[in-house]
Image (tube, rainbow, N blue to C red):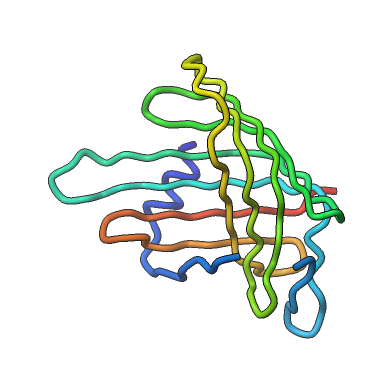
Length: 150
């Protein structure tokens, strides 16, 4: 978590997320999202007058050719570390450079709240990498990084 929190805290520019088809143009080559990915995602709030807060996810994700995605990982925050799983759909809209996964997440935090919405997006930065950094609102930063595995 320390690595993600430091990464998120170091963000100085906003790149913006896009709303997230099965391929996108990456320079002159076609990007293929299908495969195994290791991802890190985090947010950090540094709003004036409030104690800094941070939440991070570290997870493995499988992106399938049929448009589905699933994975498992750990959420880390001020209340502890909790495992989670997710299932959903992925897409890259025409003209976009963002892989977007939406679906349901089950956080095993002991509260028994059941599935919640899962949404993850990251910009395509190479054939085997996804990266995004953005200031979502003044004092609230988000960053993500994924690397293809295998």
